[in-house]
Length: 102
Image (cartoon, rainbow, N blue to C red):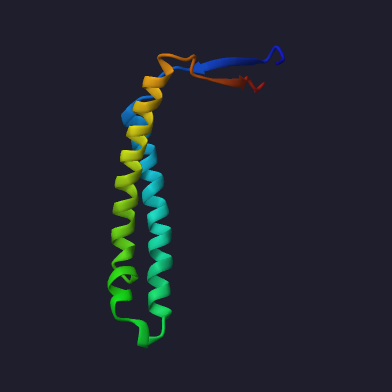
């Protein structure tokens, strides 16, 4: 480590902050996958369009972002709670940051 770098330790994570970020990432992933599933269902052969379109068709562009956002929010909140409880007994995560000259 040189004289410009500093080590900081993450001892606690704001639960709502991490949950929001995870939810936004989940919504973005859900939009991408929903678009892929919707395009795929539109290009499928008509003989296979029964139940497949009900599950993976056009509704997936709406349903997947909602589900991925919800599960991302819950996963982020649970992950932050677990980290905060574990970090009470341990030192936390050390991160080395470096100041840039401007």
